[in-house]
Image 1 (cartoon, rainbow, N blue to C red):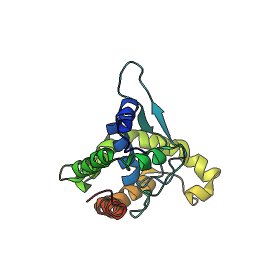
Image 2: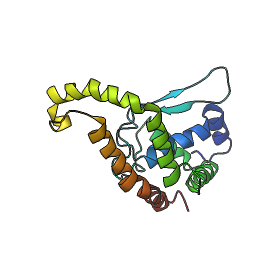
Image 3: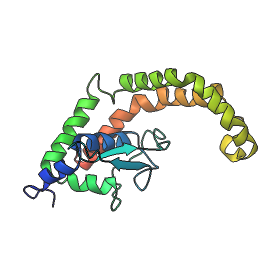
Length: 190
């Protein structure tokens, strides 16, 4: 039981709790449907006392459906199982809720304005590379995996810009309120 005296302090010694909370919020907010049983790893710097840090990897299963809800995941031996156990601890639960609150306030990284700004800043840092990647994968997907491309070559103007428009108009404006309600429904956020 995580509420047992001294046990959470031991968890804090072994785990970078702030990083873990951010890791969970990122995957929950993004509705990551290709995660927990894989597509993450944990690292430990033996030169510090920060504890294990969790890192996302290969996260193309995010931002799909504004109503995606991954809060019920509880995979044995995986981050969601650890998270569920930690949510039983009042100190962890309070830290988690405080961080969600901080990130969802005006100017917070989960707000529509900041999410859009970050998305666009990333786009502007890789915009030229998108054309190279489209050329790299476009012919392959068109010739070998037409089911994935619907018979159309990958190109930035059609595929990327269409997805960007979907995110800007249908996902980012609505995701934060949906995510916060999902957390409220679980009793994890007020």
